[in-house]
Image (cartoon, rainbow, N blue to C red):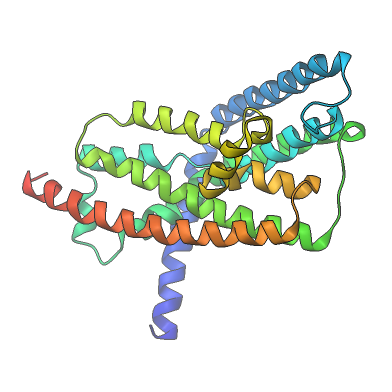
Length: 273
């Protein structure tokens, strides 16, 4: 690609991000309402665990301070990697909007990536702000760690987790090639993802074999593993192995997405949508 072509390419997608950002701002009250709900959920979790710890100092190797840190840092990471892509992809397929992309010199997957970046940016910023407010409120009850290498590894893990979560959501959206309803699938997948990510409670509270299985899946790297790194419960070497697993999953998901896209597109064009 020539420098001029690259410039045009980037300008086009930056414009798309900006347009989607402006559109998202029109729904800022809805975004704000969701963030209030998020904050209340986290506060309830903190008070629930505080009540559980009222008559004991340690649960499966976690102190109350570590558990509160797990909840706050884990949810901060979670809001950085989540997305709502599947509903957009499925809607484009069901409504026939996808057809407009089949005759344009623009890759649909590229378009959806940059549109989603713009679409979630408002929710992302407001989520980060709300999470930071809660963290500041409980600042005296959490563990603060400033290990540069650890934080650098966590940042790399978050970026890869965002890509992984995006590909999974994109894949779920493509199911609309074969069914008119993907909301139920998305809701089920979301709950399973949160469970295997350790979003409800640390996975280490479960049997060791389950934790080992979770380390082989991509979900734990959007909550449990980076939080364990932050708490110092797993070492940097284990974190690096986790990065390698994430990269393998990204390539595997790309291959699956490409295969499903080709098969789905044949069906889509075959019915003349």
